[in-house]
Length: 93
Image 1 (cartoon, rainbow, N blue to C red):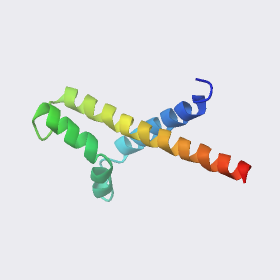
Image 2: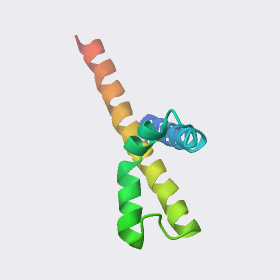
Image 3: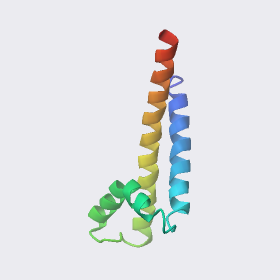
Image 4: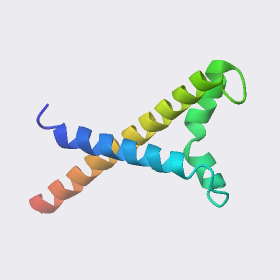
């Protein structure tokens, strides 16, 4: 567990920051297309689960933002593994 502490903390921080930034910038007209591209998988998943284009009210929105956080968490975890691997390759070479 000690070995992966950096990865989990980095992923948690990335997940919170990206989900918060996405939530804050969702109403920006300039970034609407970028927002739709970033949250494509959570949006399709919520639409598939609730069988409606907009989710099912507050439950659908909570699930949507939980999936956005999960997606950002996975992205952050992968990024931390990449950083660790790149720093390991630099010390070995």
